[in-house]
Image (cartoon, one colour):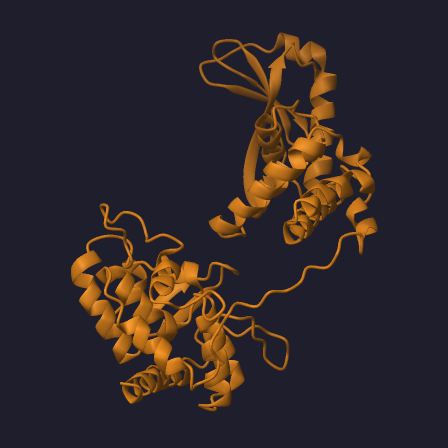
Length: 395
């Protein structure tokens, strides 16, 4: 039976906590000390959770039931009352607040289970730096399209149009989450389509002409700086992974005996396998004697607890006279993509798998990370031998 105020007042403490249930997950817990605390038991994503609502009589029966109904609506829409409370505290707002910042932080907490840390940090920074100062304290249901556009226009005026687009997109995702969890009725960002100028795509500089590649490879192998950067320069064209993935390569993810490097991609958070050619294994075995006791393959000289800087490879390339309009760290991916296809004749889907791009079969299903692995092993070995051949021919 539902609780009554009379029953609550008459409840006596015992040696162990006593629970008086009201229904719908709401119950009053009477502690041995005599204090009475309202709690709500609920399930979110298959897990049982509990939410403290308040102390009786500060929070009466009617108010506790109102909290329960509000929480149940949020749960039904896919939200988590505990995450909503934490988001409100981070935003310095009342628990029941539905401001843009409160909803955004709740959304970020939910996405933290799906995104890789680097992407979560970027999304959080975009909202904290640009959106929260302007619209963070506004009730999310009252924010208009012009208000969001003003945030984007400010960034556009600074010449960072791509950032303006990304911030606007992030705001749109927050609004859609608010709609889904019944805290807003629509996403005003949808009205801003075409309001910002298009972003001019800049391709990463890359050498895709085999005739120009020997000089580059010779320069990379001739680097006279530190052994860690020298090894990175040798492996960058061989492995053609994203620059951030190369510099944060960890020994725990490398199996030199199996000639494999298994890790989670920085862009999509998916599992990936890089077969290591014999040339790559040789470079890594040599480097193991220097950094093998630490976490990172390309560790800094200062204690080895951190990976080399984001600009480590780029600075080395510039010191070798390789200009930014000639080659970038990311450009090695375009080099491999073009030559493996057009010169060496490997299947495009094998190449795309090795680039960790999304590849689907005829039925629209994404291939798993081991798809075409034997063929990719042969391709990576052939690629390493092709690069060696080009460099030897130019000596």
